[in-house]
Amino acid sequence: MTDGDAIRLLAQRLLDMGVKDIPARERRVLERAAKRLAVSRNVNREFDQRLTFGERLADRVAAIGGSWRFIIAFGAVIVVWVIVNSALLARLGTGFDPYPFVFLNLLLSLLAAVQAPVIMMSQNRQAAKDRLAAALDYEVNLKAEIEIAALHEKLDRMRMAETAERLERIERSLGGTGGPARRGP
Image (cartoon, rainbow, N blue to C red; front, side, top):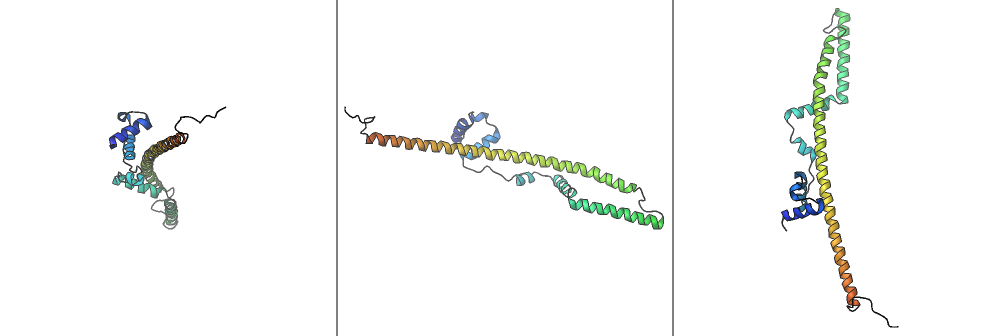
């Protein structure tokens, strides 16, 4: 039996549809099942191979910007900024960014304006990665379902053969009469 025949039989028996009607992803799973090949793939490696430099950079910025280390460091920078400007104001009568810290507010706004879209891009890519993982899980589950159905079919054939063999032995032991021996009155 060729791979194409095995695929056709599997499709008709398990999916109750013709080979031409099977979506490409399911056809690929059926081909791999017929050839006894693995369907599972590493979603991280497959997804990471598709990323551009900009996407990798955005993911890195989002990872850094969304960490406690960044929040603590940025909080420390703000505290130092306020202390230095307040000390300069007290000593010299002016600082490089006197109260109400307009330049600091500008820098914070610029950071938020750049960081927010970068984080959103990273989240969108994570959602795409999750969709890919779900698609790959579907393929693995489909192959497992096909293999389980094939095992059930094999067990059914074995049981039928065993039952037929037992019936033949019973018939031979009864003398081939096709029924139980009769006892006279």
